[in-house]
Amino acid sequence: MSTLTQEESRKRVWRVCGILAVVTAVEIAAALIHYNYMHDSPKSFLNILFVVLSAAKAYYIMSEFMHLKYELKPMVISILAPFLFLVWGIIAFLWEGHYWLSEKELWHILK
Amino acid sequence: MEAVATTNAKDLWSGGDSPFKVSYGKIMMWYFLISDTFTFAGLLISYGAIRTSQPKHDAANPLSWPDPNEVFNAGPGFHNAPLIFVTFMTFTLILSSVTMVRAVQEGHQMNRSGVLKWMAFTILGGLVFVGSQAWEWSHLIEEGMTPHGNPFGASSFGALFFLITGFHGFHVSVGVLLNSWAFISTYRGVFDRRGHYEMIEKLGLYWHFVDLVWVYVFLAFYLF
Image 1: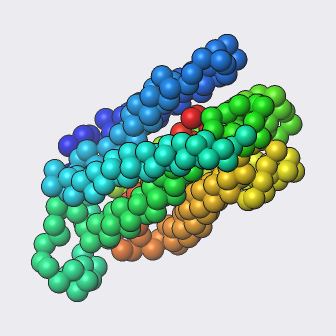
Image 2: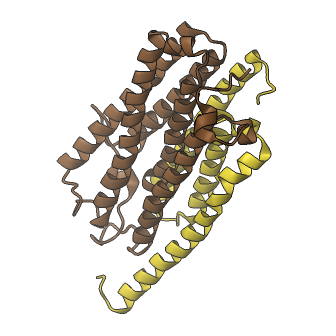
Image 3: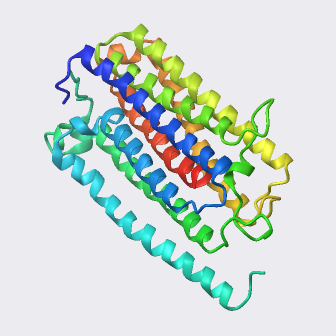
């Protein structure tokens, strides 16, 4: 249900391509700067940045490339709503992973 | 703008008008992609759980999780360049997504030669990506990485890497085959006779999904 003209949507595609390329380049640059110059500092802040930037890339791919931005709202909701389960899944299983690690440490399974 | 398919739609759907003003075929592709998202999410969440159950990277501890900058530091003809080859692979996939959108747009205009041109670029991008992945796999296998051990650290790293990038590479390969089939059909004028290029749109959804999954595979294995 595009309301854009042919010319506009063509331009938009290349703009989104540029955004995705720049975001990827920023991610790589951040990872390499950390690896080369800040190797001993914790990576947790950087990881939050990576999650945010990846979510931005996912947004652009879904909304523009997969055309979801131009579909009717109920359709968008019915596609995105199931993914809320994944939020629970990620939190629950990472939590569980930490628990496994603490159990291993408790029983001296790791040297 | 949009030529909605009417071929047998009533028979398949039996529900009158298409819901959400989206054709039967595109809704079914979205259903498939949602289920496929959960498959990939299951794999990546398992990766997260197993990874957090291992000690963080520590060069002195062979049980700790490997540092991606040390594992992925080579490409064809160069090494000691962390993440450079995977950057190339990522850009290739992004560009092939863009050429796919252009093919869909040309399909809306019923421009057969335009569709052929952009589909050719998309297929080429897919082949370059799969080829790069094949190179990376054989390189890591040479370095001694197997599903049950590797020289970089925790043994589960190899199993998860081969499983998840393999499953993604399988999706890319299937996409290349389907796109090649669509290219031949376009060349033979099948979609012109049908009166719409909806098949290209459906394959486009699939192809962008493969790109979308790569964002998260890339995040999990190469960035974190």
